[in-house]
Amino acid sequence: MDRTFGFPYKKSLVAVLVSIILSFTSVSCASMRPHTQPKHSNKYAYRSVSVEKFSAILQRGDVVLVDVRTPEEYSEGHLEGVDYNLNVRSATFFKDYQSLPKEKLIAIYCKGGGRSKQVAGVLAGNGYKVVELAVGYDGWVKAGGKTEK
View 1 (cartoon, helix red, strand yellow):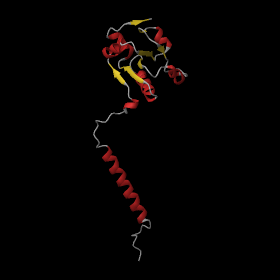
View 2: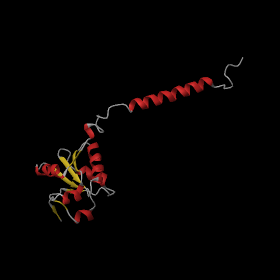
View 3: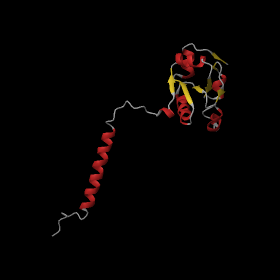
View 4: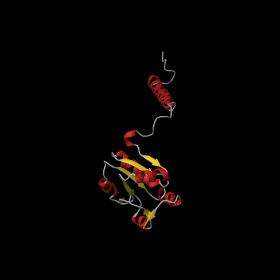
């Protein structure tokens, strides 16, 4: 007598259903983990800081200041004491940033904070110690930070 109830692949169907149930269980358990874990391991982390903190870091003197805006943006005004203007939009950026010293803290900024966060992630992921100006050049100017042309 046929005990498959009209479905000849009953064992396969059960195996598929068990797999689906187990995958949903593992996903739901993963989402129940506490959110206190850092998003990045310390090895690849960078700090995004306020104008006040960025200014204090620059005053230490053992920092390399990097502007990652375009040359046109840079020529319109930049923070005092910039060591490098590395255009993140340049085709050679991924080669150019390798000239930065890994033994020093790299302080980076862009116009509004978006590009510098991306660059900070790239640099940190490649072994650099990085701090990034959260509000960018525009926030620096608005806060009264010193600039030059």
